[in-house]
Image 1: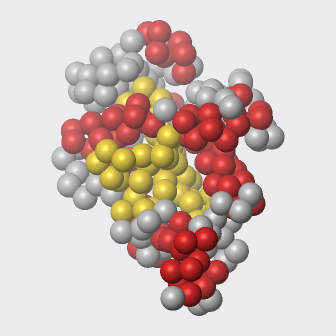
Image 2 (image 1 turned 180 degrees about the horizontal axis):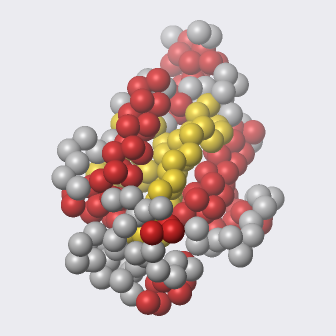
Amino acid sequence: MSQENTLNTLKSRFRGFFPVVVDVETAGFNANTDALLEICAVTLTMDEEGWLKPASTLHFHITPFEGAVIHQEALDFNGIKDPFSPLRGAVTEEEALKEIYKVIRKEQKEEGCSRAIMVAHNANFDHSFVMAASERAKLKRIPFHPFATFDTAALSGLAFGQTVLAKACETANIPFCNKEAHSALYDTERTAELFCEIVNKWKKLGGWPVAALQTEEEA
């Protein structure tokens, strides 16, 4: 593999981290007490020229865990009328996370990365709910870094001067439909596009590969 191709790999680009874009819909703001209702994860890959793009999409509706608090105002916001409706086709937190983690571990290994890192818009919120659900499900092999994340709210504030997902996408010329927003699937797909656009824009501007790394590869 040439020097340029070595630097233009997912492993090299993110210091061994495997970025996975995540969005959750919940019944409140407290990850330890409020229900997780929907989750979507989009894995990423990098082509031979170093351009970042979406890979696999995994999406699940979630059954509220036993004793979960459900705030009506949260349901009004995300449009989930009845979290217990069988028409949702919901699964348990354990089932959803096991399947998501299985795919992440597989693709992470294929990319030669050592650990997954969550990418999300206002990432602390999504990270806290995923970690709390993983603990409730007693999952031990959690691929995500325990606290580090890539927050697209902060990154898009830097790149586009916007921190709201819809406005950041609009500024980045990524189509965004407010009627479809607040669905985990839709928001994750748009966030993935936004993150890829930011990373690829930095490359287009000459910010990657870093000159120091190129010199190091030549040594």
